[in-house]
Image (cartoon, rainbow, N blue to C red; front, side):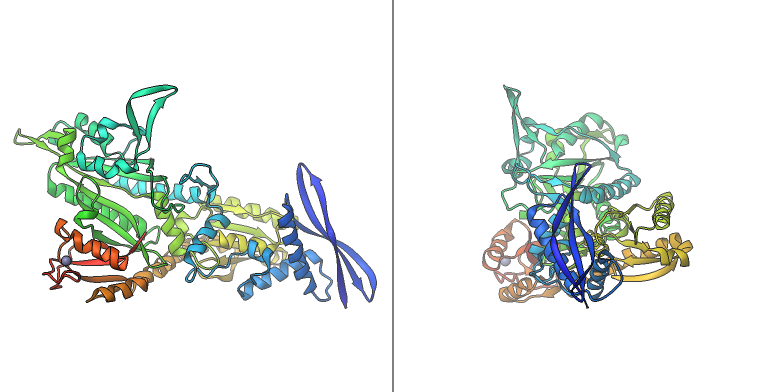
Length: 574
Ligand SMILES: [Zn+2]
């Protein structure tokens, strides 16, 4: 029987870094037979070090006689733990730290907060409330998301612009319902250096009042229409509701598209095009299912004639509003003098639409909808890194081959990295699974000799061996499978989630169970406001609106019992 005596850690300073090792004495039949070092990590805090030691203790205690080095035993042990997919014990701090294991279904809120920290998506310790630091792992994904959204808009004839961040107060006040809607949210710039400005400037909460002022200068005749513009920008809103990273913060990153058209009919075509764009990008690429609702009168965008918004169902049963598209009221064209001379020589007001996919908010839904108890899962096309290569062992040939594979993948436009860190093998596996990388390639000497590669798929949690020469064709097929699979799983979220209700009590039961209630409602125009307030006050539900193109089949309003003009959908919402 071997036993191991554990000694305290050693600290070795190398190139300004402190590396920590754990000294292990191996004893057999009472005699010391060896002394080994186990690598613990670099630049560890005292607390992290303690956790690492406890963990090494635990793993080494369970190891029986073997000729293998202690380090590789630890790696194998960790791999075994990962394979068995046992939930990690809560009291094992170290394991809790390197693995991620939170029941997303039961503790969604904790899961969401924790994964943002562990996967290094955002750092919330910035010292301005509601303003967070977006870290590379989220920015790399959001850059790709911007790319797909912008390419789609440009393909449909939108041209990119960069408008200024500051909006003069006089622009904002030109259209009364717009300013009324946005005043509470505005951050004001009042000084230039020490000098008080003659007019306050708003940090853009949205840019209608800048775009339309310029539209009036650019548009002269019907020949200038449609004018389809957009910009990617960060916008600022003084949110008073509780902020949550990506979902609601005081600065967020979005695209705003603004268009001017000759007729209301053309403008409505644009609204439909925006809804199709949402389907093509959010659903078909990002894998997010949603339902478009036309918002009730009391919930329209300030200044809009009609508002349509895509609602995504969060795993906790609450709705998150994603892109909305608006037919802007002609009060706006009037206020900003957006006119054109039509074919009949008459001067007419243009019809304006705007569309606002908020990339950082959409990212919140990608985290929430696709992730599982082990962490993030990225759709292939927007994964910050698509493939992680993990060479096994210290063999130079293996390392060289890893580099070759990386170059080969890069040449095929696949984003890839190699993990050559000194972390334990199991730790590497956990870490990149938690980070949501779709594919992992692992291979050591044995595979190298056989010309094989082991591939792990994050979406199915399965491993398979392939011939090294088939790698690219394997990835081309599998990447499509991964996206199809994630879309299918996400689509199931909405399955059987819409339930008809006949009483307020039934609505309450439905929305408390994380579903969406469908019922009759007196009106989604201004006169229905009171009944909507009752729903909010009594059962904490929100009227999301009517489904486009759906005919009302209900007879009575679920609140006031008057004749139902509309069939509405009610849910809990963020
Ligand atoms: Zn009513």
